[in-house]
Image 1 (tube, rainbow, N blue to C red):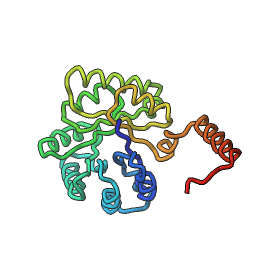
Image 2: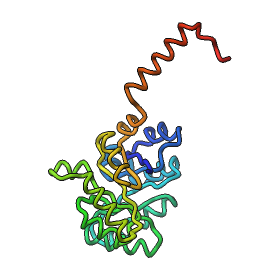
Image 3: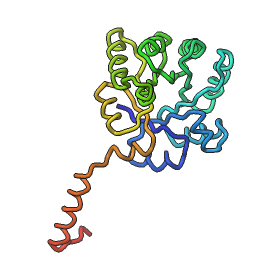
Image 4: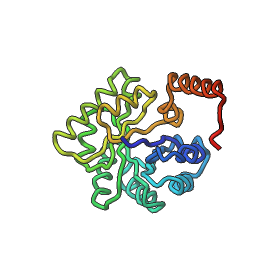
Length: 218
């Protein structure tokens, strides 16, 4: 499963790219607004750090506006994925971009029917919002399983990008559901390689090594 960072902070991205475990980045207007940066400049800066997909979202709500903004975002770098809202205009734009070989990430998905429409529009990625589905009383993980089952049954190539993940348990569940990718806040990403027993085991090993004389390797 690909792991994306959900952030517009270039420092956060650089710090976590070092181990080669980050496959891409997702952003949105809210994240970029918090950074105080110009949207085009910040996307360009992120693309300079990340080799993988970088989702950059349009802010227009009409088809013509989405087409114009999406093409402008795509001009920034070859790894930009144009992020579109799951609306009628967004789906029409998605289908048009598929014809132009412009990759897309259809976002704000909350139902199987929406995911089906995105696949029929030839979206590159569909982003079901697990946490927000649960906020509304639904089962976000079950939604991932349903989308996976339908996509597999009909051979849709749209990749499932689990979004709005709020815990390591969400990440595990997304992987078990067969998601192609998951996008995580840096805080959750940092927790994936952590476990209390790993910490205690390492502490014991180091203590025993010190007790044995702690010979240097150099």
